[in-house]
Length: 299
Image (tube, one colour):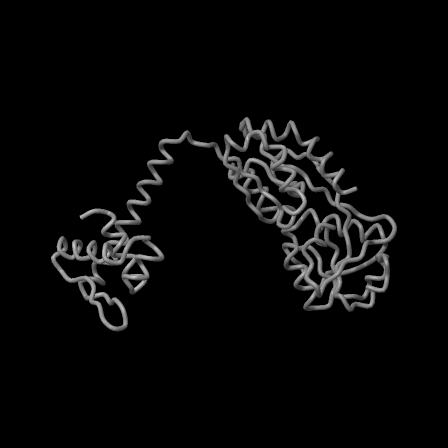
């Protein structure tokens, strides 16, 4: 018995036709395939298939044999893949995290500055919310991340941009008639704010409203942008979110800039000081290039 016998048998069983299996999957002649199946049945010493007017059907022996044949082929494929990996030099992994939604602006730039290393490393991309990315950096599960400057962990940060906050609102909200929104115009509206988990955004928002002399109590607290967008649409409320949110808005939600002294929130490249990865060292040496390229694209 050879592996090809198992592959032929599985193909016929799945297609329920010797002719179809021969022509479409195995690219051999129907008589040759029939002969291979007979040889297999001789080796197994049991009839595996019956041929009738409605095509090929498995016998009880054939159904039992099919499961084991699939497993054997899967194990052979796994063994081949393991051998190929072992024969090749192992590539080091470099894990990059992005605050969900920031990939749109920063993934291409990050890959650009790693372009000369891509043949030697395997880049792993993770999308998550900023506090979770900070935890992953501290635990060594990420090498670098694009996130907020999270104050609770001992990480290093290099700010790459300062994003203005914008007002999210339903498409048919009365304030969509305004080109820009004064904070006083948000008073009395349902307000969707960052929760205690999104500490950086919550702090920026609260400081801005306090400076503006506006007393707005949040009606809903959200951990992330997706939740904010959903609540704005469903409650017809307003929310202050970083400008990158505009890339992710559904048709039912729009944004407007703030008028006057617009608050901003930092987006930074974060990393652990204890990470000695040479690729991280190279990446950090090119952060200024990354910032320059992103600024040029934004113009």
